[in-house]
Image (tube, rainbow, N blue to C red; front, side, top):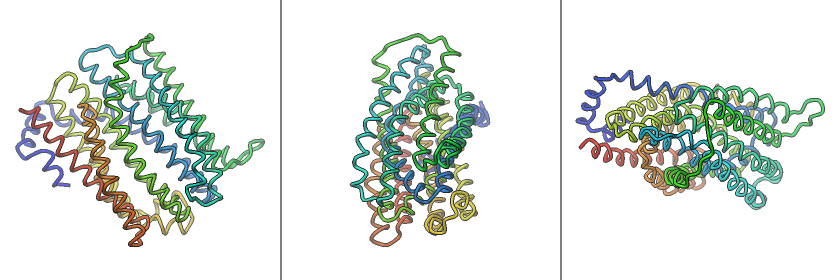
Length: 456
């Protein structure tokens, strides 16, 4: 890790940063980042807890239900990443506009329409994938619940896209408290609906994996429309058309979307590869990914705050704040992920035991925890660097770095270690560690050149 920091900022530049921050104070930069990040952390953790509720309820229902939703969500998430990445460009773009003193309330309706377009495309893509499930080599008893889960998920895409676009729109104004409180409330709503639809109650029958999809359908639309109504209540918004807005969103967001897609497909393809061996491996991959995603939400929130602050500073051409927010935010993410890794190392059995009582699942998941702890630190670093890239609108490097790291290195290496040398799921996670190091190195070298250029 010291190697990465030394190459991110040379010794001369590090001393320069400390001198700059002595005028404003490093605590001030931390405070400004946390003002945005803290509610986002709360909301992102809430969002992950929604998924965690699915995992816990599925695991308590049956290993078959757990395996079915693990595979179905892996496929759906891969398709939905394009929409998530594109809507994720709303807050950094509007933050740049705000730094340039442009009015940005008028982009409310264009953001809603943008979410609608993306939802339609995502829905058709999911529907098109459903007939392929029987041909992918999964266990026969998993095919029907996977297809049914995906069908309902396709119908819920607009709710999810609307929620994400409205959250990004408000984030550009640094309005983060209400959207994330809404997410926390939705955790309990989702959990209650999960139990109701999965196990059944009264006239409502037990639906198993399908019940989880039905619950997600109601929760996504609730969150999306609640945020849209909130925006209209607190802002005077009028209909507005500007083709350039969509063009800029795609220009910034498409590389990020494809980068997220590359990463998501890499992670979720592991569940698919291992699911063809046995459902317990797909369930274990889902469990381990859930764990890393929970801790990842902290640096992910910090990355969002970095993107907003760096985007505003970039629009205002305030390169001092741009550098300092980048440096401080990255340090915050690394410190947290080191702490998180220590927790995973010290309490692997207790953590896995939260999700399952299945002995086979224990035996597969626990050996991966050591590798996961190493991966965590580099994962926190790379998402912070991605936030900087979004803020300065230099997102192509993120796509290139992700493609090289995951598809030219991680998946081939992991597949070889898993099946040729018998490491199975551990082999794929060894490949992910190597890819995360390559990913961080690539972005650090690019950003170092950028900072040297703006310093001159």
